[in-house]
Image (tube, rainbow, N blue to C red):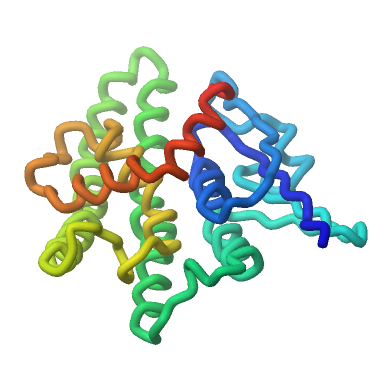
Length: 239
């Protein structure tokens, strides 16, 4: 039976990388169409030709009968792939509690954690783009906003995740956010937690790795997964 053709519209330094990882975990064949951010760190206009919001990731599916489907938004794409292409039920929750946990942490990643982190980019970029005469004042003000809101809100999420992983570490050295195996929660949290903070500099000195040992362990385990490594290798050439 002919499988649908999958094309992922991938933007550098974006949440699209998580979709590449999931595609690798599912063992699917797919094509990557890469895009690069412009000098203003914005997505190129060409992405608007794929989806009206002009953002990445976007997944295009071409079915054997010629029908086509376009799926946007990271969380929606992850859910779509798991519903339609997880033939061996690798990601299917085995209990009502596991389903609730997976759904909660997946939505928390996109609805609570990521917005607080994303606004840091806006504030820092605003300081850089401010008129020369006001640059120092605006940067100082924006730093205060981040210290008062973005950093505390982000660290609340990290405290929650660390507390959960501490409990899970009591029964297993193999750590997962929701159930006892990889889920959409791990995949969606990988970008904001693993790449932007634990191994990135999004929070700077506000994030102390020593205060989050289990979260760091989880992040290292994520990065060591063969599918994660393959995903990184496949996109490395795109910059």
